[in-house]
Image (cartoon, rainbow, N blue to C red; front, top):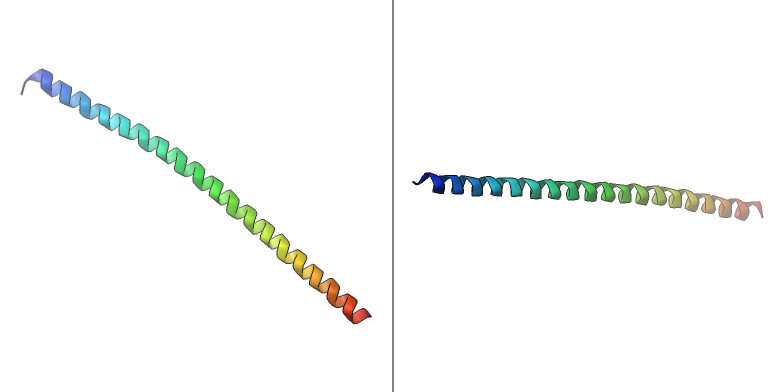
Length: 70
């Protein structure tokens, strides 16, 4: 094989590895960011669900107390 051709093949392979590494890094950043956003969404949903349930039971208790006090 001609040395110039070997160098060309090596450089192309090296370029591909570099580009794939950069793409994987971008993908990783996207996935991490999306996961963090998803986790925050789940936390907020749990918080509001818990608040809803507490408010619902408080409301039921008030109705029950007013029903038995009349």
